[in-house]
Length: 362
Image 1 (cartoon, rainbow, N blue to C red):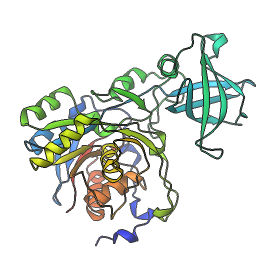
Image 2: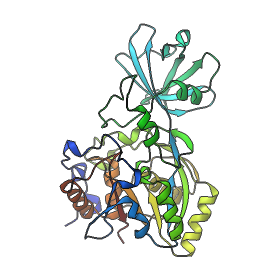
Image 3: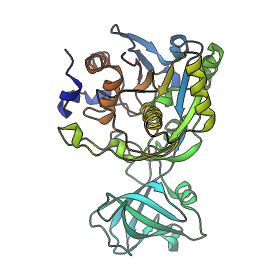
Image 4: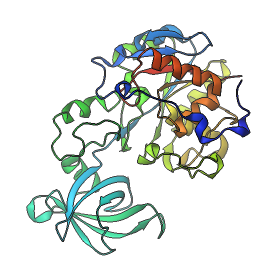
């Protein structure tokens, strides 16, 4: 029996995941990954390339077209102490907001040397303050390249692609032998707007063949942009879900996508979100009326969906906000059954893992 929406606590979304099911590399072919058809109580094991057969003419798939940037940079303080920045957002001019990993944090006004610093072919950064306020979790820096490069140019030249913390490879080293593979496969085939520090992973399964088959089926596609932040990996620490402070991410819904959503509704098609970031974008717009801005929407059981009818998504971390979101959409008990099935049948989990197709519980 499902718990009532008001009764859910953090522990309800916990489960034991065998470590060997955490995917460390992508499938050999994007659409050769597995797809668990979980639209009904009877679960069906499929391959992702079968997706077009599961959709109907007139349906609308909504993708997140954000592009992951090389946001991880290594450097050192003036004292020689090592540090690492994960650039979360580019502000105006040469300013950025970043997570900082360092043994002892420098004070505002301190200059740090990244990738060797300007003197050694890299670039410098001056710590300005915390962000978004004096007690904020992030840090605001002014970047200074030798040739006046923009933050985007500096990241592209010197940065490393940030991978999720559960991919236990060489990503925390300045030399990663798998970086070439990740540069291709940790991006969607339609990534076009740089700004994310994590990929919208449900969309990684789509390749040109699947997209062509969807078009032939009469399934329409549209794009939104939500720049996925590192906060997506932050654990929920409060047993009472109402006490959790959700991270903020920037989104945008272009006018052609608004038109596609309206056409889909008029023809009584289904709006199918590709990934939880697309869900958060669409439902944020439905509540605020704003087609662009910051969102910290927190979707838990009891949430009233206004836009999304179905969802394609990967398998998520225990006790994560994403587990709560899919439970809100498809029903708590159903999701727990889905995850038990996935574990029992050796589905691959998380960013490079397999996917599932869910329908909104009516």
